[in-house]
Amino acid sequence: MERTYVMVKPDGVQRNLIGEIIFRFEKKGLKIVGLKMMQISRELAERHYGEHRGKPFFEPLVEYITSGPVVAMALEGKDAVSTAREMMGATNPLKAAQGTIRGTFGMDIGRNVVHGSDSTESAARELGLFFAPGELVEYKREL
Ligand code: CMP
Image (cartoon, rainbow, N blue to C red; front, side, top):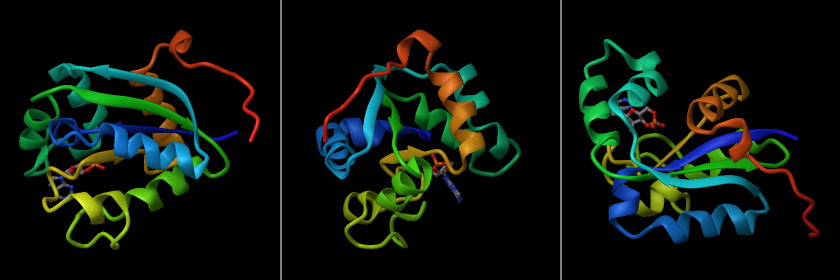
C-alpha cells in the first residue's frame, strides 16, 4: 500500500489547525501509520528542501520551517500521495481550490499550512528523513 509524508507546518500549529488537518485525512480514509510533533533542525530542513537550494525563497523557507514545532505524519492508503495532495490543494493558497486545506486556511505561499510529498519517490525520501523505521507502525484497520 502506498505511503506519503504529510506535515502540519509551523503556521498550522500556531493557528490551532493540527486537529482539523488530521481529522480531514483520517475521515477521508487515509491510515495514520506515523505521527509526531517535532522541532526541525536547520540540517534536516536543508535536506528536506534540498531541491529548492539556490532559489530565492530557500533561505526564508528554511528559517520559517525551523521557527516552531511541526506535526509529522506518515499516511497510508490507495494512491496516498496524490490523494493527500488533492486534499491540500495548490501550493499557493490563493490559487488552491476552495474546500481544500490550503484553499480554506491559507493566504500566503510561504505559510501554506501543510506540506505533502509530490511523488512516491519524494515520499520514500521524506519518510526516511523524518521517521526512523521503528516509528512507523503496521496494523489492521476494520473499515
Ligand atoms: P511545500 O509543499 O512545503 O514545498 C516547498 C515550499 O516552498 C512550498 O510548500 C512553499 O511553502 C514554499 N515556497 C515559498 N515561496 C515559494 C514560491 N515562490 N514558489 C514555490 N514554493 C514556495
